[in-house]
Image 1 (cartoon, each protein chain N blue to C red):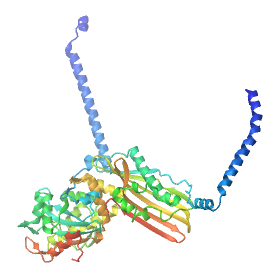
Image 2: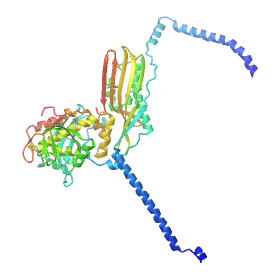
Image 3: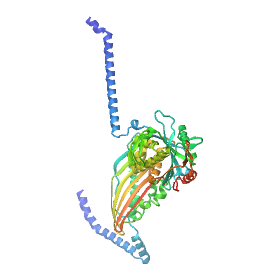
Image 4: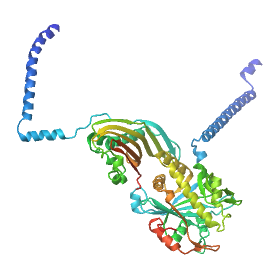
Length: 321
Length: 226
């Protein structure tokens, strides 16, 4: 029997042993892979917490930058814009539960690179355009919004920077917050804006509530639009302070490159635009809300035509408004 | 072998004085011929002596210090050829724009070619006084020191190096026409690759010149966009 056993072994226990060994190997491999994954995830999280750039963790899109119209031939030869150009800054109201992305914050920045000057026109969202409110244009995309605002003011918009609620807060937090010159007392439960007059350091959510507050003011969105202009210029001033040397410039541009969806524009364009932005003194940029006459759909008020003509010829408004 | 060397020595020592005398005599005659010959030759000699000579001093050699990388995508280190090329370009700048004028009174020939063509008008015009020491001119004594060069790079969304900036300080002590002179320079040059060469695409420079007459500061900041 023993010989039989030796010569003809029972195949069942051997198969079981093989199966057991295979299962063990699979389990060991699974445990190893799980450990490696956990350690890797902990390492990446630790590195991210320590401030290291981890593309997967840091690559959220905060804003969209789109080139709408080509600049003149001479501008392209000189590796960047030399003649006046116009940028539309859009804050849209897209957020969880609210679709459509209407352009609730609309600001046209005219830039004159040769004179190192700029002017910002604030466009109230309820301004009438083609029988509707102008902010509706953004629901069809930034290009449509640019066409509408450009048509209203009479300028060709070259770039649109579009940001939603989440992107705005992420962007402000990404640059370490902003110091905002709060012009008046704010106490608004709708937006959550509770600020005293004077310079206040705001994080993303606070800056968003400051930008949204309209219930504190009799003229509602008109003051809100102007306040948004204040915040933009304050932020520009602080960004400019961080761009005093190349490492500072590169840090901001890399941040922008990681978090911006770029359409028709590349990092080199951003670098050149950044150099133009550095040459501007935000303290000297006029923040002008366009003249209007009341109603639910605002019409252009007296002086608007003159203001636009002054603005469109060289990107800056020379006459006081 | 010994006898050969022994016998040859007296013969060589015997001819050496003769050879030396011949050479000395020839040199004396040659010098006499150059030195004589009337007014025309005297004038030629005077012109030769007033021509500015190159100040023979060893100027600073730049070395890489810290490195900082910012990227819109994956982060890659600055590779060795790029680091060397950019450092070489920065060295060419200090040699041609700063050291050459102080040593010879003229800019180095390669100076305009160090910059992006879009900057040529500025670097040979309005910004030249800040970028170069041509206005100081030739000095009689010169010592130079340079801080290590801080390299910072901006990389694109694919991790490709787009711009490399060099930041460093340069200090020069010299004796000029009006006495002792100290020049301190803060130099930031941003390079972009143009074909196979790295050209200065933007700059921020400041030159502080302390002389007996007073202190002057000139600055220039410019990118390819004027």
